[in-house]
Image (cartoon, rainbow, N blue to C red; front, side, top):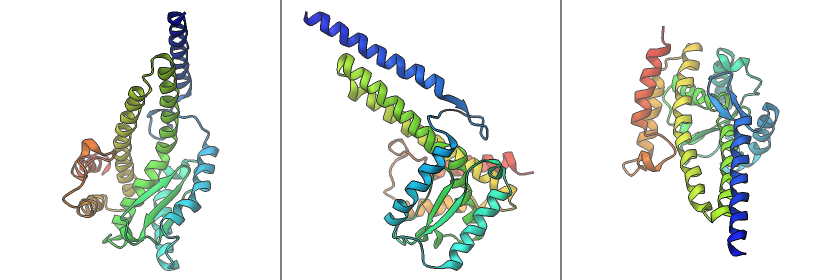
Length: 254
């Protein structure tokens, strides 16, 4: 009887895992802007909605918006110039640029659907409009690359696989670990892809793409000598990013 129950559990587990893989195959699509095959489980409208829904919370976590309309207008001007001069204009996303009041955290990030953020701490470190274009171009690249949507789709897939493995043989932790490693690896790829897209957007808008290398130097300095080794991080090392950025500049600069 016990062997029969175990066999049933194994069959159920295998069925769940098989379902996860079949579902993933059906949800894969080619990103029309990058040509990359991705697992996407939501519509463009849902991406936009998720970004808008999470914008107030993300803003609050960083101390609200920076109270200087002149600086916000400057960020808007650079962001909109990048969008209107590039492939980003042809996408259905509604790009908005938010200058956050956080003066301690050197950071910039993007939510699905076009919501882009930069902290005052990072803006204050930038030495030129071209460097700001490098930061915002990179974040626009995350949106256009559908990186958040892909991450959500991959996470759903690995959760289903982990459930199937747990039912079948109590191996959920092992499979979950594989899923996490996959997500981290994709994260590095996303950063490098966004760097390359950012270079392309900068060139299209008339900015000097070499400025993005300066941004990497700022990030490297901010991380300090105790920064996390690349193999333990979801982000590639700034030195590796600089190398890829130089290759992208040579690729797109006419």
